[in-house]
Structures are given as structure tokens and as C-alpha cells.
Image (cartoon, rainbow, N blue to C red; front, side, top):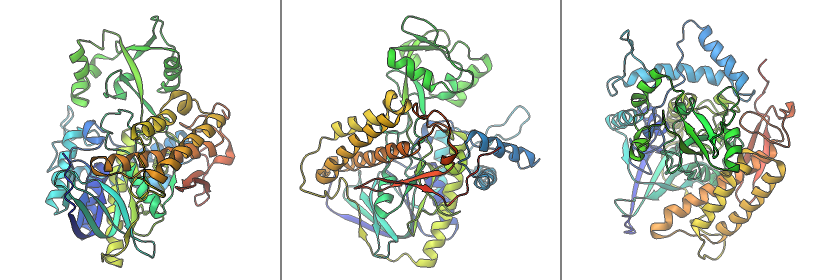
Length: 529
């Protein structure tokens, strides 16, 4: 139950981390080890919130010897990433992830294989996050649990000076004055019911954009995951062995390879789709309880054996969580274009490593581990060089300070508008210039109304701000998809079915009152041969 006492807890630190998931905790540990005083503010309870806490994350985990192992992995990813990723960033991520995970041995019980060799690549999400919470606590990081950030603070010179938010359990507000801020708030699935994503509503994107940051890769948001209807249990590994049927029992033909989203979505537009997992090998069935211990729970409740019985399925959109887009980073330490503001994990673009296709669980996890540490250390250096003095003003707008006269805006209706454009198969998976233009217009109209009149208060304050963030994110996604007039990676345009060399570049996007797009010519992009 939220209590609004009107009191503000004001704190000062060298570095403020916003978000307590995988990237945020690694960022906090790196900043603290660099000598900075650190405060971490989490929307939920740090160690249990975010998508990692509900998963069994793997990591992009490749030994350094022989060197050709990593060289081959990078070369292959360059090809599948359609030229938008960077081999130097990929090499850095592989190296730092390899070095980092063994440092958790005192806090996490790594499994061993039949030869007694420690297995660092795949971890159990709940235990992984508990270990990271223990790590930040042991290092002396001040953690504000159940304390969502609402807005950044910015000095007159444009540098970020902290953030403000609310204390959902303790009551009142909080303000942290900081020399640098790391945004590690995750992406957003637009509340699609993706497992573990309820707190991921794109908050960091909006806060950073209000400070002047831009985003990149927001067109790559068409990743969907199969799940049973009436369930949030999205576990893509198990469905690799699925056989799918239409309502009449006819098998739905699937192309060879892992890409099933488009044929499944096409079938779901026509009617109900069912699945069984009978093709799952016995050794995989035996490992599922260890890899994904909660996968079988819904089936047990329903009295279904998924390896024998058919059950109805749906597709949950993953937006920018297993998509690619996020805040653009302009330096090796994951600094954004705003002085003192850094981005990590799903809050940052993953084009640098994933390219134009999803980073899945393994590359995205490795990115969170690495970008978190680079951002945390970079923020510590920035604070040491520039000080952590207070100053600046709160800059949040949509949902906090309406541009015109306040009046009631229906949050449910606004969310339905967002989801209707961002999750509908016929608009987001089967894209065309015409449908994207119409989506952009609908979302722009919704933004004009929301920005002008919405002002959250009391128990509705957080949800109002989250809705503003999802609406802003949806506008950037639609604009970026419209600007990329080709098909590349997970971005497929039915009216532009071929890849076009003119778009061997990243698409930048930003703006609030008026959304803009531009080409990022700061990187020389060449398609891998």
C-alpha cells in the first residue's frame, strides 16, 4: 500500500544506479570497486525484480583459447547480425563476461559437469540475482528498494545531477544528488504479460530522452515468444521442439531453423493454434526442471502433459527486452550523449553486439554483465572528475507536469492504444509503410493528448509515468521502423522485402513533442562477407 507523506528523503552519492536487475547490480559493484559512493534505486526489491530473476539465463561464454573460437563466433554473429554489430565490442564483451562470472563463486553455487568442471555459462536466475544482491550489499552500496525513479535532474550545463522518485513502502519521495547516473531500467514489452517484465515499462528511455539523449535500433522490436494461453510462462527453449496445429488439427508447416514467429502469427490471425512438445528428446525433458524449474507449473495446475497433450498457445511480444533497441551509447564506457548519464543492459541499444537480430538470452545476458560494469566504472570516473555536488532541477514532463491544463486521461485506454500498435501481429510482425505510418499517427495523437493533460497523483502517479514511457517508446519504435525502408534481421517489411545497402547504418531516433529520425554515420558499417 502506497503512503504519500509529502516528506522527501534526500541523499548524495558519487553515482546513482537506477534499476536493480542484472545490469544494475553489476554496474553498482563496478562503481563501488572504482571507489565511488553508490546508491541503487530499484522499482521492486533488488535481487528479485526484473526479467533475469524469473529465468535461467545463459551467457555468451566462449574460451579465449584457442583464439579462433572467439574469432569464429564473432565472424558468424557479424553475418547473422546483418552488419549492424561491431567486432571490437563483441570481443570486449566475450572477454569481460569470461572474467566476471567466476568472481561470483563465493556467492553462487555453480554446477559442475560429469567431469567435475564448473559450468559458468548457464545460471539459475533467482539464485543469480540473490548472489548479486549479496554482492552489492557486501560492497557497501546503499539500496533503495521499492523506490521507482520518476525523473532525472539536470544542471544548466546539460549534465545530469541525480534523480527523483517515490518510496512505495516507506512513503514520501526520494531525491539523490549524484555526480553521474547509470540508467539500468531494462526495456519494455508494453505489458504484454511476458514473464518477469511487469516492472519493465521503458522508464529509463523517457527519462534520458527528456535530458536530451537519443536512441538507436528501436525498429528491431518484433521478437515474440510462444506461451500457453492464460499464462506468462514464456520459455522459448522448450518450444523449439513444438509441433503446431490449427483449430482443425492440421499441422502448421514450419520453415527449417528457429524462426517460427511469422508462420505462427499468420496462423493466429486466422484462428486458434495448438501445440504439443512430443518431439522433445528425453535428455532435454530430464533437464527442464533444472534449467527452467517453473516451466511445468502451469501444466500441472491444468492437468496437462505437454509432451503428450495438445494445448492452446499464444505469442507474447518482447518489445525491447529481447529486441535490440535502447539508448545510444557514444563511448566505450557506455556513456550516452548527455554528460554524466550512462546506460546499461536492456536500457541501452544492443546493436553493437547483437546486430539486427535478437541477442536472445545469452548475448543479452553477456551484454548486461559487461555494459553494467563499463557504465558503473565510467560513471565513477565522471563523478571523480566532476564532483557530486548538488544542483540542477527536476526535468520530468509527460505524466508529471502537463503542458496544458490538467484533466483526466484514461490510462487503460492509452495502454490499449499502445498495445494495439506495438503488439498486434498484423501491424508489428507484418509491417508495411502504410501500416507503420498509420501507427505513428495514432500514437502521435495519443501523445499529444497525454502530454498536454495527464498528471499522475497518489496511487496513480507511478502508473501514469509508466504509461508515458511506454507511449514515448512506441512512437520511437514506429518512427524507426518507418525510416528503415528495407527488411533486415528481425525488422521485416512486406512492402520492402529485400535488404538495401543504403541502410547499412543504424537509425537514431529521439524527440518528444516531435519525433525525429536520423542516420548514424558515426560508425563505418560494412556487411560481413
